[in-house]
Length: 624
View 1 (cartoon, rainbow, N blue to C red):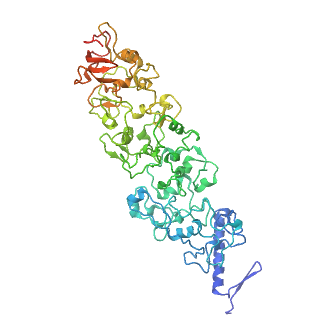
View 2 (cartoon, rainbow, N blue to C red; view 1 turned 90 degrees about the vertical axis):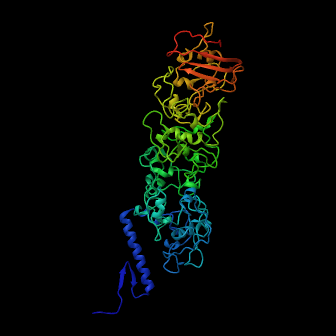
């Protein structure tokens, strides 16, 4: 028999009367729905990962240090069934009145035509606690704020208080669509986003794209495990990162870094690896030291040196090289590398690690000395024709970016008769002579070369400009022109001034490739005076204490063979033949000098041509 009487449910001595008001029945349904969710959660993972046992539980039962004095309702700090402030979903916490947050900006976004708006949508809800301007217990459904323990009102200073300056935080509330992805190849089309990473209903990227405020199973309320930067890579398309040295490195690092929030599983580990940290080795989504590109530290080099200072097992100590007398001046200013800057002449001349190294695509060297462009495929450069390149393919192209056509490239260390500091012009293959950087050299008869060097060899800038403690120099330090005790950033000593005794140490850089025995036995430059006295290399270098660089310009010379370009501090035109060229080559081992050197006037002094290395005495037409 039918009846209008509503049934009751008996459970644990409690009676739920379905005849109560619609509101009561609604609350009943909501509570049991939440209970059902809790059951489902418990089946899939531990109870400890839910909001109840997270710092988002601000009730008196919460596990964190910030919690209410007596309030037992966990959800009330954000949600309410009645008297919400109108924001979805049934938002209870009073919203911040801030209307002028300082938002993220960068030259890259400017180039894309993207301006980050003021926080909106769900991000605005998050900021109602996390900007630190509204009391944590200030909720719309209560006539007075919920009292918090230990005198806490607003979010205390720390990682949870983002403040109103969001310029060092990942941009939020912007429209992330296919049009934006088409402009920037470094972000993925939003159609590729994983099921965990979601945009809001208007296609905007909000805090909730990365954070689920109800679920802390991955740490920091992330929507997914971020080991290996899986979360970051859901949106970011970082060229050359897969397979790079950093992405594969098993080197152990500490997850504790100042001004940084560790994401995902790494937040729960005492130690982790470079590969597991991924992007977070250098970047941080909040409280970035460098606003653009969200670097952890404001000084660009400090994002690299915490690992490359010898403290990380198996990683060379590059930081030590920057303490030497001759360095690439990474601490000269705080200007960071920018992908939109003038490649050759930026507004402020600077050098940072990122100007020479692509930290995303750096490769592990397979053997020997790693060549710069091969190891860092994403570095900008300038080719031999002076054309700027977004990605250099040769090491010298990286160097020419600053040491070529740059207007602020600096003076030469040696005063030359023919002054040229543009290395791109010095290495031109149309020059009369050059060290073989771009192509093999023009001199086909160089008896002093030490194997494996031949006249068909090419070389790199770092064969000469390198750390004095590098493996290439016989040391255990890092390869590369970071710093050296030998100016200008030389791998080995090379005395640049005259009147210093010749020794294997004083001219070690030249003797690295050119046999000292061959040079001092005058195989490539031998001449005698009328008395049979030698006046070749040995006489000049040993007896007269003339530096190699007094006669030779090691980079290249446009209008002279054999790299002849005299040091004008010691060599001047001949007093009697001042209009004549100071040096004229007349063959492989012959030439004429019209100059004054060390007080001696060489008025057309010459030495005769030979067929290869000299074996007997040759008489100069004029005495030395």
